Length: 341
Ligand code: GLY
Image (cartoon, rainbow, N blue to C red; front, side):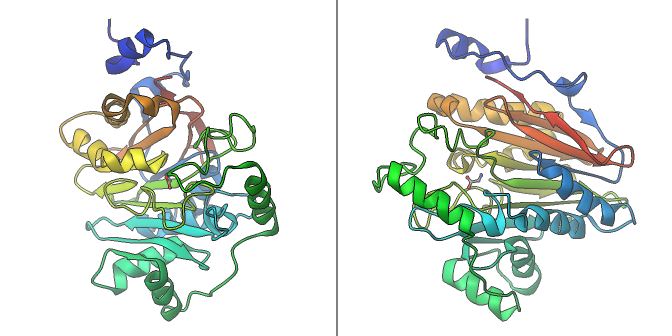
């Protein structure tokens, strides 16, 4: 019998890795239907982000404006240490932000490794609308942002600095990919699995406006204590975000390296184009990651998708992934994502 653990269930059972799974609310296993206009976001901090987006969508506004406004909420939240100005720094103490945005015309803009600018999502939109390019990085992205009038600020908050100082005492300071999080905090108990309760990461947001157009935004400070220069999936169009106004949109959260390897969000949208529901498409994309790299079972990756009909899907490797939903019926809904483990 097919169950929701589907393709990889047998191998995970065989390896003794199958956990209890994340039970979703009734009906969630086949996805959730929203009414137009609507907006969905990753994680619990997606609830206030959705509400900011809803203020625009509810007035008949454009999905692109809604996702930018929504993404700016966690970017300015000083309690959020995985997105925007209070994001945890890299291992050298630099807060380095990644973001991308896509509109209903297939337009896209992104910034990566952007420092000292609190709202990377708005810089990404400026890249899309004011340059012939798609992605600006590092010093060039900062220069462009300043030319566009974005204020240059110190983003390392006292709390983030204290967390970084504490990490430096405990962590082995070895230049090895992902050594920054080692066992993802299981030993120290401080950080937790990327995407888990102690380490929520990316804000991915997808909106369908009253006119029936889709847009998406994705913003993060990336993996805490990352190697300087590390870029995750969030600013990589097709990996952390993809919008196709004919079909649907998808975004991702969790360990970006695994998403980039599989061009995850593009994969989800292409599966929807072939007729899969958003839920099924997200599940298949997670299964693809695990099939190609079984060790990814120790990490977290989650996908969230929204199609042109307002159907929503979400699936993750591990339990603990949540996503926020908002339409005319309710603006504060939070659901647990289903997972393989
Ligand atoms: N998903 C965010 C990152 O890996 O940077």
